[in-house]
Length: 241
Image (cartoon, rainbow, N blue to C red):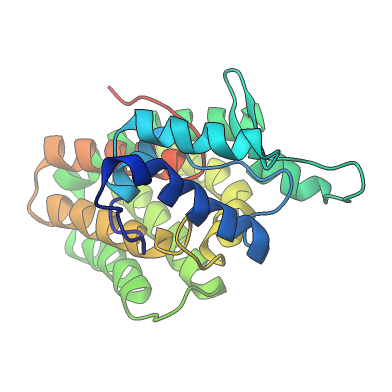
């Protein structure tokens, strides 16, 4: 997500320090808490307008300070201190539970196909339901529980417009368990997480346009990329083909 509320440092020697200080501020403020997973290197590099090597330098600096711990194959996490009690739900949803990665991968496969079918089959009423969910997100100035509901309703509406009730049922089953994950991320202000709802709104609008225009390939790609981007914002690198 490239529209985060960050100020890109102009001189190369200070780029990594700039990013490290921004993330440290999130930790100090409590917006990032012990056990929370950081977004992916790709997400951070695009958000701050720097290379992945610069992001790695920033993470290394935070790790040296004891603020971040990196886990091979899992990502980077705010350090858990023995004296801090971290709710189990926070760890499950934000620390990198393999089930969440699996859900994102399944969503990318199923929802991209649903979007393609919706572009071919959706009737006027179904397109309006999809558009209504996008409009509800656009009209809300600050993220609320309704923002999350509008987000999930958008994906359900696309699935329903596919014309395949089995596909719609499978997608609906996967979506609801992610409500708390989405709500936790959308509720966080600050330079790392604060623009997530805005990015989701924009990506939804792109998908809606492709469906409205009756372009299955564009709708498939837009939805697949949206799920990949969403996973990246939550700290998961997945692929869509």
